[in-house]
Image (cartoon, rainbow, N blue to C red; front, side):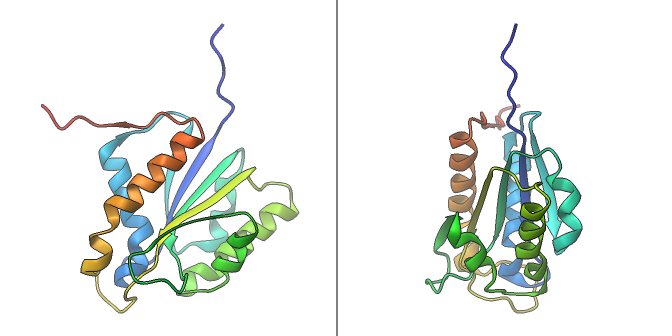
Amino acid sequence: MGEVNPTRVLVLGLGNVLLQDEGLGVKALNRLVEQYHLPDNVRMVDGGTLGMHLFSYLDGCTHLLILDAVETDSPPGTSARIEGPDLEQTLSRKLSMHQAGVPELLAVGRLVGNLPAQVVVCGLQPETVEWGLDLSPTIAGQMDRLVDLTIEELRRWGVPMERISSEA
């Protein structure tokens, strides 16, 4: 009998892609989907600016990885991995309206016993959240680093992440 993997991972890319660096979580998620084979126990969701509307996605999920722009008072492009007690404090420092729902989402999940055992945020300190579709050059230059951090986290959770071969 093969071993059953009870790990159910949800990767949420958050942000508003109309506000330059604010959309970096969604863009990192898209890069992961394009470049990696995703095992069956991993669900990738473009959460955009949905906040509390994402609650149903927590069902049955054991591990939650959030990709987002995070305010850490660091130089633009600085990567961050946040978990535990620092999580809600960091997320309460809102960059935009979409983040208004994320701490509440986690609080309600905890209240009803639906919060995954592991919750981690991987992100970057944004440079600008002005109107625009493109990431700032600083953040664009750090996207591979954010994807690498995400892959490291997923592998730490026992998820085999294999790059899609570029050969035909």
